[in-house]
Each structure stands twice: as C-alpha cells, then as structure tokens.
Amino acid sequence: MQKDLFSLQGKVALITGASRGIGQAIALAFAEAGADLVLSSRNRRPPELENAAEQARAKGGKVLAIAAHVGKKEDVDQLVEKTLAAFGRIDILVNNAGGNPVLSTMADLEEEAFDKAIEVNLKGAFLVSKAVVGAMVRQGGGRIINISSISGIRARNDRTGAYCITKAALNMMTQVMARELAPHRILVNAIAPGSIRTEFSRVNWTDPERKAQRLQEVELRRFGEPEEVAGLALFLASGASSFVTGEIIRVDGGQTI
Figure 1 (cartoon, rainbow, N blue to C red):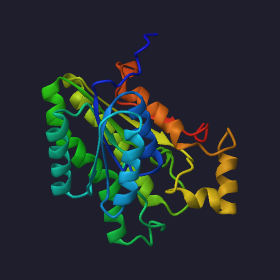
Figure 2 (figure 1 turned 90 degrees about the horizontal axis):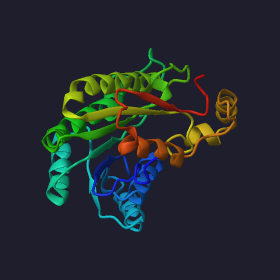
Figure 3 (figure 1 turned 120 degrees about the vertical axis):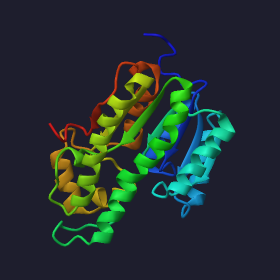
Figure 4 (figure 1 turned 60 degrees about the vertical axis):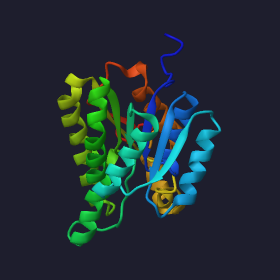
C-alpha cells in the first residue's frame, strides 16, 4: 500500500457540525492527514467552534471557523463563498450537522418538529452539497461524505421516528447524488454510526435503562467513540477509497447484524 494513500495534503475540507463530537473528531483526523479546513456549526455555539478550530490548527494546517445555519440558504451560500475566497477550492465536504429536535411517537409528533427534523438532517445536507458541487465539477472531482445513522437503516421504537425517517432519506439522497455526480468524478458516500458516545447521544449512555438496552444490542458490548467514525471518514476522503461511491457504511459494533 502506498505510504501516502491516506494523505490529505493539498486538500481543502468543509465540515459542518464541527464544533464537537463526530464532526470535531473528523476535523482533527483530517488536520492530522494534512488538510486545510473550514469548520462550521450553528452560531449559537461560537466558543465551541473556535475551540475545535484551535485544536485542529495545532495539527499544523490552516483552519477557518465560520458560524452558519445549514438549513438557511443564505447562510450556506455565504459559508461556501467564504471557503472559496479563503482557499480557492473545496475538495471534501462532510455533512455532519444534524440532530433530533424532539422525542415523540409519529402519532403525537407536531408538524413544526417534523419540519425541524427535515431541516437539520436532510435539507441542510442538500443545500450545502448543492452549493459545493459547482466548485467540485470545475476542479474535476471531489468527495461528499454524509453522516447518517443506523436509524436510517432500521427503524427504532423509541420515539425517534422523525430522526429515522430523515436519515433514511439522507441515505437515498447519498445514492442518487452518487449516480448523478459520478461522471464528474465526485464520490458520494454516507457513514451510518450506531451507538457512539457523544454529547448528542448522552441520554443513551447516561440513562441506566437506555444504556443497558443499547449495550445489549451492540455485539462488541460497548459504545463507539467519535474517533472510530473519523477513521472511516478519512478513508472516504482520501485516495484509499477512489473506487467507492454510493455506499452507506455502518460503524456500529455489530448492532445491525
């Protein structure tokens, strides 16, 4: 295997939802591999975003932190414009921004909450992907990595129905984009994490009942760490995955076997 197969030297990566958790872990892995970065998250958490940027800068690359709401087209357009102004190109996009705004059965789910789930988990990835594709086409290629979930592969009965639905849609969007963009040498894949120990999933590893249930489901009998997702993201961003597109790759410790 070539020594530099996982190198991102000379590459520019835009990562949304990068202030903590999986997004931050991916940013640090990419910085370690030599990429220049633009890190983004919602503007309600600028200290966390700048902290993540500082940690990435310590790896040696150039890092720009830009607050943006990916569900708002004007924010997305400015985010991409600022990235291109600073670096002149976008080689890698990681759509990590997302969330589960409410726990509810589908019968009790309010329309506003359903709209919010679509906005943060699906529309945001659509808007940012659409905004960067032009630059990637002009460059002659690129990588788009969508952070999905095993909840988009197998429905759960734990009041996360809206989240499951939006992640399933994100998986299909990944495959549609992979087919449409293949002629332009833009590879599009998704990562579907299982039970990863992040702030977003805190209830799953701090609530005794939910923790016991999740650990019983996971064949490795432990929660995953954000760095274990970041390793796969680095593979998909690098030359090591040059013949991989349209895949939904699970990182779940055997949870969906």
